[in-house]
View: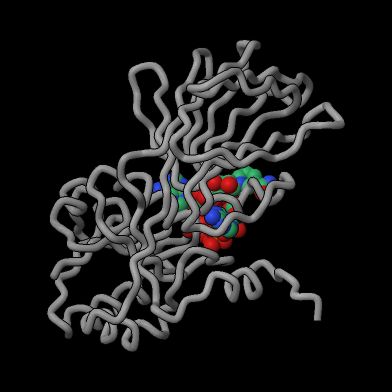
Length: 275
Ligand SMILES: NC(=O)c1ccc[n+]([C@@H]2O[C@H](COP(=O)([O-])OP(=O)(O)OC[C@H]3O[C@@H](n4cnc5c(N)ncnc54)[C@H](O)[C@@H]3O)[C@@H](O)[C@H]2O)c1
Ligand SMILES: Nc1ncnc2c1ncn2[C@@H]1O[C@H](COP(=O)(O)OP(=O)(O)OP(=O)(O)O)[C@@H](O)[C@H]1O
């Protein structure tokens, strides 16, 4: 069995010791460890080019925070490999395992005691590109001063024109990220659908909306100074219509069998239970 590692890009050097410890644990259980060339270079090792690593690995590992996991899920989309998040970040809402518990987890993993959660991914067609988002896409104004008009059509009919700072189209997984801050609902991550949440709409009536995952959305901005942001990490100038739909493949996240979403909401986001 082969694992392919990507390390959090900021302060990677601090992760060297943790990575080497985990590598030893994996290798002692006959799991070959590959590391992508960018992460390897940052800690003075030799690595494998990202796509070659994804091709060779049976599963991929993000050693970092949520951002590292989101980025790995997006960049490895076409390889469709299961992904394990080991938390070496701050919030770690999505990364399930702590480095201290890796031996215990990997022994269970090798006995088949784990879960794979299939998370819906968004596909965006923009110009001749196909882009993938694990959390969300954001159609945003470029400058602080001017609002934008965002027209949304579904494959069935005209939907709405949003006027404000922007529009978030989130996956259920991304519902606890930017969507949450903008007043959108928490959506159980194994649900399939799009969450449309306007950012500061200049209206008394705009509300977040959930649409089924078989809808195809066309989104167009009237003004010519908008941005398209993918997972908060990739930014494009938006000057043409985009088409948004559910991607063919889900992202496959490896979790502990015992992981409970509502416990994570309580622990990490302080979701109250009224007691
Ligand atoms: N005002 C906001 O809340 C805001 C603004 C911009 C981007 N974002 C979010 O940041 C995401 C990218 O994350 P990053 O870590 O690369 O950026 P980042 O470093 O700016 O961190 C964003 C924060 O959101 C958390 N987060 C990310 N995805 C999450 C999820 N699915 N559920 C719960 N928490 C989550 C991260 O742990 C981190 O604390 C984007 O997809 C977007 O949703 C949020
Ligand atoms: N491949 C990547 N390319 C560009 N930026 C990335 C990549 N992977 C992660 N990042 C960014 O690096 C920053 C830090 O990484 P990460 O989110 O993993 O750690 P953290 O912020 O400490 O943890 P958490 O997100 O759990 O609070 C994030 O802003 C993330 O967007």
